[in-house]
Length: 233
Image (cartoon, rainbow, N blue to C red; front, side, top):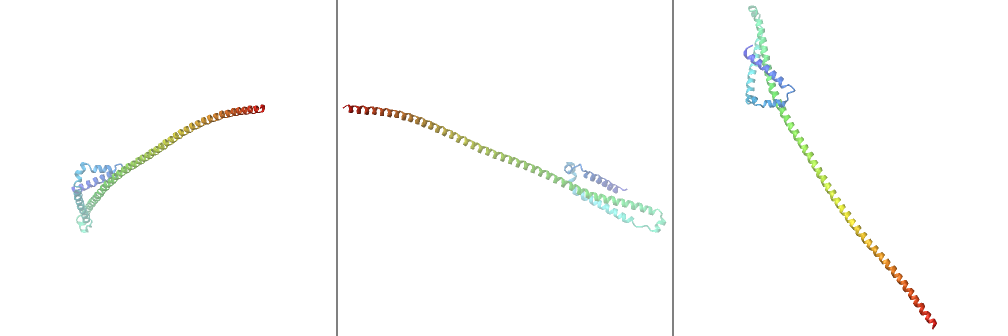
């Protein structure tokens, strides 16, 4: 194998190893993205488009060269050449085998190179989407937490307002009860005073009645004395 096809084969094997590494399930796209953004990789990715175009052109040229060799060595050998050179057919088949090998190596290297570029782009896109999703999820979580805290604060405020209203109603009820007690005390005091006054009036009435009875007896005695003196005359 010549030097150029050895380099293409090495590129093909390297691409296969890189593809296997990129397809490993336990390495997340976020890690690959952080690796792609590292300083070491950034040195090469700064001219990534240029490298991609150059490698694509080289692989396309080698792929076209492989096609040309396959077509050149696919033509049959004439019977005259076989008679003059019996080993010509064997040499032709060997060259055809090498041409086909080089054709497949260049073709698979070109194909895997395109697949790797697309795979790296998809991994970066997936990592970016995952980062945006995580950021949105954190934002949604923080918004939900803030909403719950706001609702709790509103509920606490409403409870405080209800408690204040209840305290005001309780104070008003206590004030009303105190006023009623004072009113009841005043009424009881007035009732006791009226009761005492009624008792004193009743006693005075009884006394006056007794005085009235005594006066009536005196009057009767006086009238009886006067009538007896008239009869004696």
